[in-house]
Amino acid sequence: MSTLEIRDLQVAVEDKEILRGVNLTVKAGQTHAIMGPNGSGKSTLAYAIAGHPKYTITGGQVLLDGVDLLELSVDERARAGLFLAMQYPVEVPGVSVSNFLRSAVTAVRGEAPKLREFAKDLKGGMDALSIDPAFAQRNLNEGFSGGEKKRHEILQMELLKPKIAVLDETDSGLDVDALRVVSEGINRFRASGETGVLLITHYTRILRYVKPDFVHVFAAGRIVEQGGPELAEKLEAEGYEQYTKASA
Amino acid sequence: MGLNEKPLSTLHEKSSFDLADFEVPTGREEAWRFTPLSRLKGLHNGKAEAVGHVRVDVDAAPEVTVETVGRDDARVGKSFVPTDRVSAQAWNTFEKATVITVPREAVTSKPTVLTLTGSGDGASYGHIVVKVEPLAEAVLVLDHKGSAVYADNIEFVVGEGANLKVVSVQDWADDAVHVSHHHAQLAKDATFRSFVVTLGGDLVRLSPSVAYTAPGGDADMSGVYFVDAGQHLEHRLLVDHSQPNCKSNVDYRGALQGEDAHAVWIGDVIIRVEAEGTDTYELNRNLILTDGARADSVPNLEILTGEVAGAGHASASGRLDDEHIFYLQARGIPYDEARRLVVRGFLGQLIEKIQIEEIRERIMSAVEAELAR
Image 1 (cartoon, chains in turn orange, red):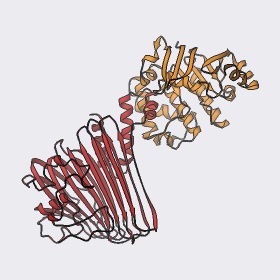
Image 2 (cartoon, rainbow over the protein chains, first blue to last red; image 1 turned 90 degrees about the horizontal axis):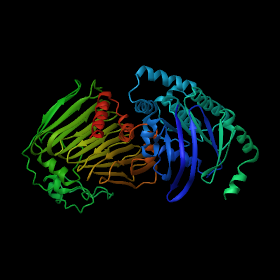
Image 3 (cartoon, rainbow over the protein chains, first blue to last red; image 1 turned 180 degrees about the vertical axis):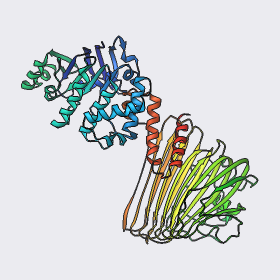
Image 4 (cartoon, rainbow over the protein chains, first blue to last red; image 1 turned 180 degrees about the horizontal axis):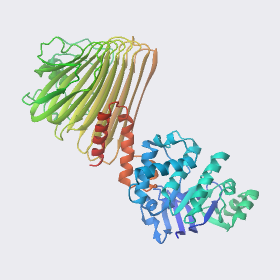
């Protein structure tokens, strides 16, 4: 069973300190929600773990089954079993969805999937997320609506089968129908009990569909409160004000 | 023939068949400032004696006639006048011209392929005329390979309502020098599609131009180039809208990698006073993959009438987008492959426009080979 262990992680962007010592352990079979106000560093945590070049690690460790991800390149982290569903997936002109997915699956599995098997997996995955099969031939994320982009992120997660998935505000910008479809995808993914999910969100809405085991409140670059699902309900009622005041 | 009157536009200042009307370029001229003259091996100053050979093999569609003619043939030199020294040099020096004729209303059943092979034995000069008679349709492939120091003029004379598609591949050996002018002349309602692919050669300077003799002409000119270390690949487009209600679209894209890889793209479009209802757009994009590579991109749009349907240009040269690469890498795809995917996508979007599958695939695999270097 896999474990992601974040130890005293400190991250800066252009000399500005954003994360000030984050400690968090996500085990396979668990879903952790990270909630917090805008600008609290939630997304920084996601991108720093994935290795985005904009973020400078100034201290700490991120261990996936004992391997320090921070020592690995972005693609090595993904191949080690980390997945980041992005808040704003970029459009990549000229690269088709199917070509991209086949390249990604080949890289992560270490061998090219059998063509027929891959086509079947892709079709099944797209059906489950109500994605029009014609999207396979379209350029990656190009001209996709916000909801379509998020569905494709979940499609990628289901095909790549990571050990730990970090979902960065996957719920933002989704209408209720899209939110339900995306949530079902996340629930399918975690149903095996062999994967861990770190769900970053600003709103409690998605937590009605994807029940977390743990809720962490993020403010000013660190976790300021932890609890079970009941903490989300408290945030729903009271908002983030008490945390922003406390950290200011 | 003497010096023609200077046109209204400043974009091409003079045209003449007489070599003496063009001074030897020094590199200070606008038209020559990007070209490393010392690497032209004398094509520009009369020192490149015509002692070498570029063999022309033609695999023609059955509907097409192919002739090799002398300088005095009435069909040669009717659609253009040289506008620079090397073009005039080639005009004055070539001995035999290849004339390809697509008869009236003929629709060719397969592409006509001209393979030009340099034998590496010195400079040579060439001339090709492609005459597409009214309402005919043809596809032509020009395939340049081998080692050569070569200057030529190619005339594409597209008749009324005719349609000519040309793919010109410059896949020369590493030491080749090629200065070429493609002159397209479009009659009423003629359609011209040009796709230029430049990959090989030490120095390639290719100047495709379009002129219209009547309204309704439609020209689309695309190009892809891949510049490696030390290569100079230059494309100079000129579209001269002198007739009303004609269209032109130019889209050139290049990728550059390695020390002293140098791409030059000049896109000149003139819309003359009488060319009302012109619709034109030109675009050049460069993807710079490594340090030490340089792209010069200069679009010029000169509009002399107030009545245009559309006129625009854009030029963008940049590095690989970090966000693209990050996204692909975050899905486990290693950096080199991510880079290949992005470059292949960038050029592939244009290459997809080639309707002949065989040629499209050949060009795609040539790009793959460049990326694997």
